[in-house]
Image 1: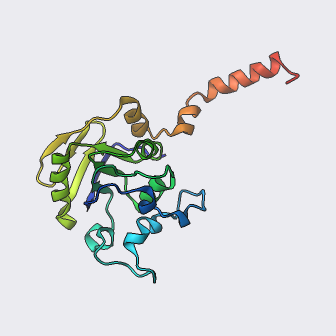
Image 2 (image 1 turned 90 degrees about the vertical axis):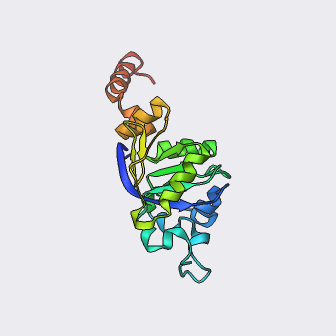
Image 3 (image 1 turned 120 degrees about the vertical axis):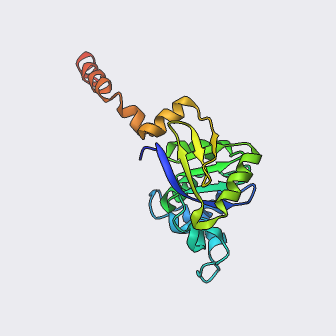
Length: 201
């Protein structure tokens, strides 16, 4: 998993509440277990017409936001079913950080396990960041996980809090497998000793 330390990128405003995982990645794209290639299906029903052509008014189809790395959105983001494909699709598109007043618990946890930083902030601060994001190509926001600070295009700064363990995992790029491999020497030593002590197993 790619570490997350500091991100300076374009923020896209998705001013919607209760964006569920089926809106993020519709069910017909869940046949794969690969984490790549899902970015093109992100928000499929909002991004494309039935004939496959783009809906120009959708935020991620606008030229200013096609390379967005930060999403500023409404409360209860990621609700609905627990599909891990939702953070996979966001990450494959290029989104590394989602800022909202609240998240669905399973989606929130899945973000950390896949290298996305979900940030919970009070509604009034999200409203200000949403306003910043509406500036298009000038909507650059800086997110510093080490300092736990967000800086807007005008230089304003807000603090955010992340669970210390999750913060450490993101800073170091540790997913569940990475955490286990930190103890690889001890695991190998145990397996070697176990073979000696119980060769019949």
